[in-house]
Length: 227
Image 1 (cartoon, rainbow, N blue to C red):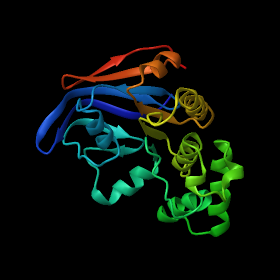
Image 2 (cartoon, one colour; image 1 turned 60 degrees about the horizontal axis):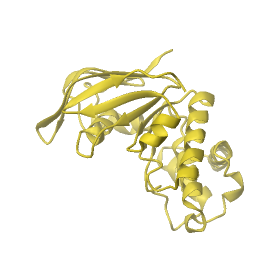
Image 3 (spheres, rainbow, N blue to C red; image 1 turned 135 degrees about the horizontal axis):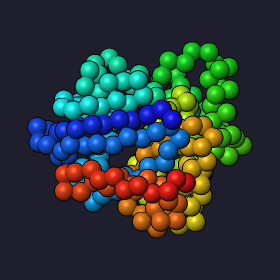
Image 4 (tube, rainbow, N blue to C red; image 1 turned 180 degrees about the vertical axis):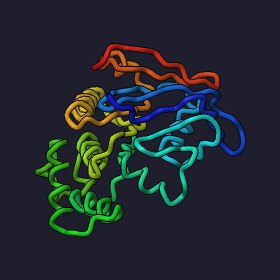
């Protein structure tokens, strides 16, 4: 299996202060990895380094084909096209329907042909079981439905990696489990690696995967059986 994320001896800084030291971890394609740790432990800094918001200046870092040490500002949009992001609060655009939310992302990332934009948007809605909801406005959907759309949106550019930041944080337990099953299925079917930050240990215990723990300025790898 090829590596999607590799960090070795990476030193991660936030505003000049080292927040994580000697970070060593890897994510393989189609692997599901949990990122756990207390608020303020450095989880967000790690995620920001992976998607290029924080510059990596020491150590080795690679995401997809991008070298994080050598990464130029003009390359960051292309790096981010190889990464899908799923947020806790969905972050759908409330002034347009579901389908136009997806059109917006494709247009913003360089897609030009209307038919191709429509076809890819519908394909991604189908992947998450929302193909019949394209004309609905976000406020007409439940939290779980909005999160499904958010996951569909993250898949638009066929990313090698999805970063899911507390994706079940605003959902009830039953809906959270539905979303977890969906994410796990996508990892397998789309060959997409998923790194999911979460505080929900019930989810971690119910759906075992590799665990990466951020604690005391370090990143600890905890092997677990594959989902």
